[in-house]
Figure 1 (cartoon, rainbow, N blue to C red):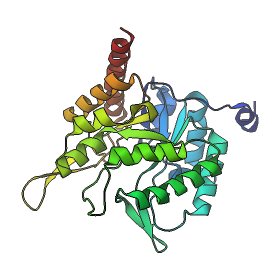
Figure 2: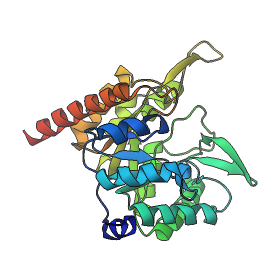
Figure 3: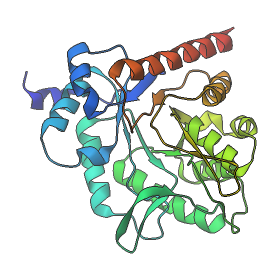
Figure 4: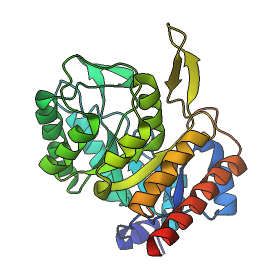
Length: 293
């Protein structure tokens, strides 16, 4: 059967309530040789917006066997300027071609006056920002013809113009746009430590019924100017114990939800990444069993 015919028959595969991992070039050969027992794979669509080549060859083969999620990092959904229509067009083409089970973006901004900043920068949480972000989410969902998940950020500064909690901002964004949420437990712990709030209370208040995906990652710790701990959302190591604890509490509330292990920097051997996914699978299984009981 030709590749074109296989693509024509492909239907949108939902993401199973299992652990998935990011598909990294360092692991292409492992995945193609082993076809490992993982629930799904996630990629950054920006890495596949070029035509053809080895990355697309690999992604075609992986997508034929596994559900796929697209997790955008470059749209600047909270940016002050209009969304880049060319970027949305390329994303829409990837969605049409690969038919991912989930599509997500960050609650952040990364563009200014035509320049792209290699970071996901925070927003003030107030009515003006809410209206602006909601309009961008509406535009994106209309262009893709589907719901998009929006991820809570990791942050290092706050704004004097913020007048609502992040959880309330996200809940209202869901209400206005019909979007879903991506809950990053590592981002919760990083922000809570940096801004001195209770991460457990944040998890307990989160609108869990709208969560379509969870992320887990490892953080780095440095010293702030006053000597206190400053956490960085580094994605360069195994998930920390405190984040595993938040994740277990989240699953106890939500039941089994598709969960991604993010490890984007200092990428380890495949076995180490797979071990993290297996740990998440055990928590998913335990959480589902406890809710069934």
